[in-house]
Image (cartoon, rainbow, N blue to C red; front, top):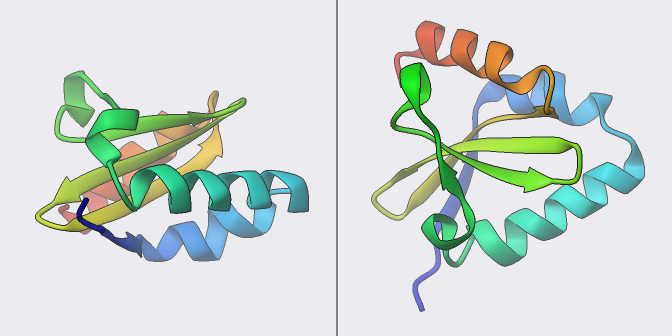
Length: 97
């Protein structure tokens, strides 16, 4: 089983993670380390529409939106399900990912 390298969009570390409670942070970290590091396509669900090249992973009421590129998983957003797609779309349009 191959291991993927996890990379974060700068806004995830600056905006998303600090807003999470300690409990949610721990849960999301565990999900990333157990699922995304080893088999992101197995656990993730492909997105549609403007986010067609991206994937999502549920973590309770939160969503992790990511892109798989070679052996890298690039995390573009970790937010509550009501906000995630709006913020992720902005990040994609500004970063050109």
